Length: 313
Image 1 (cartoon, rainbow, N blue to C red):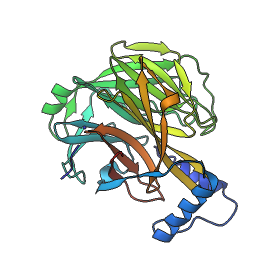
Image 2: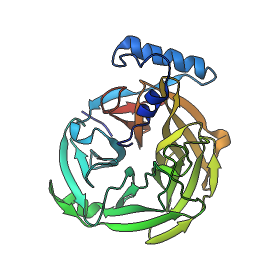
Image 3: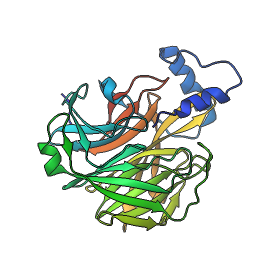
């Protein structure tokens, strides 16, 4: 029993297309994974030992492009990213089947990339921007009280927040810009939105108002993520952010997690710790639960979509 708290244009395809040496090995074998690990070790020998993801469940086919995670009443909620319906999926306790599928009224899935939550609302971040030319992003608020009462295949009311990152300039340059976004977390009374920078591998933080229906915001900080941030969550008990992401190398996609203390209302990157993840894969979402981390992996050439748990040392 589970104990708990992207996209259609896969970057892995870009890696394969750019490689001019031998083709990718059969990555589903142990030997192939060992090859990926060795390549990463040679490329990034300075990085610390890995955190191990314990597999809890193989995710159902309905959510094979999982991109966000939330927890309510003993069950997980997730969703797919770009190219799929605007639907929320409640998983069974084991995590391997869908219990409910719900559509938030008035919402569209241009590129849903993250979930965040507080005691009253679930927040859906439609913020993906692979091409770099998106001007407005949306966050949909769904009241937990109403969602709890919605039946399978039902609809639930939602409120839309329209967000513009006012310190960016749209540019049409797929996977070669710093305007993408896939991570959202509730920190105290704010929503924290983190960018996925394809070029400089940093991440910028945007602080959002949970109530304002139209917001034009500028970043409050930029941090050396050393990769592409795809998910975030905040633990108010330990006052730590967890950021998950990946970095692309030669024949390699290496997943990682940053654990970042929040001090005086801001990330303290000087005290942050960086950890690689094993097994490899396109790990997309992250969620604190009882001192551990729950994560999901999107289906890719590195394997099936998975739900996993990381027990922190």
